[in-house]
Image (tube, rainbow, N blue to C red; front, side, top):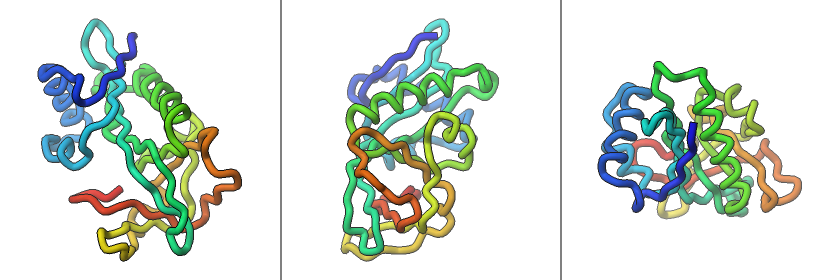
Length: 180
């Protein structure tokens, strides 16, 4: 296995097409709009015999913590974590996420992601956010996103504010289709 890290701008078209097929197989839905929604970022890929076996990416986002959403943190937000279904359970996803965690640790105040696979990420040091989740609209208004409660996880870094409480409200800026 070999890990490859490239920015979206560095991805050759054929590699981007391969990532789209991988994500469509893993998530079982078309992916073109997902790429548009999340935008560019840093892609980490596990390769086996020049084929991408697993993928995850980091995009820059801000999270707002506290009852008044008054603490803003620069976050490495993890998107599109996928392994080919027939290759799951072989360590490819774990290897990708270890590298993702290393990059987040060097570059951001916090890592964050939304998932339904909490145990997988918890084994890699991610913690479940226990406070209520919100979406912050362009005008600053916050809208409750209760369906995400218990699904947002964070990874502390050397730049994480000391004493960050995971039971406080947390908000993310709105974006089309899936804010979190």
